[in-house]
Length: 108
Image 1 (cartoon, one colour):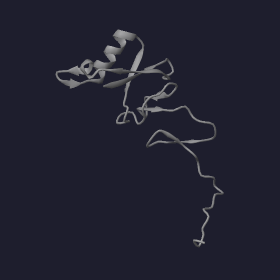
Image 2: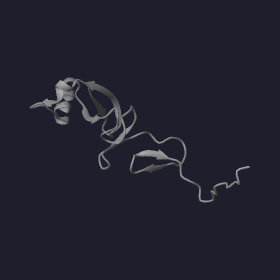
Image 3: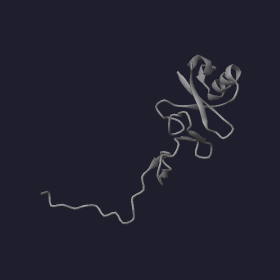
């Protein structure tokens, strides 16, 4: 099964649907474009494929995620706080404060 995310005009995810792999086949090869055509024909809108196991577009799309076309990734809404975005994973990370010093113990 393939998963496709519907995007609004700001590339925010509205919903994610499952499309049978048979709908993606072109000469026995799966095609994202064919899946997008299927979604548009049945539901209208703008669609991008997402991967349940995050093999494409870094993260599985969820409602209110944003699709970043430059990074070719789905990014979750930023949680509370001043977090940084890990460019490799496109996931939010807690910054390490500059004044942070790891505690060293002698094992006791």
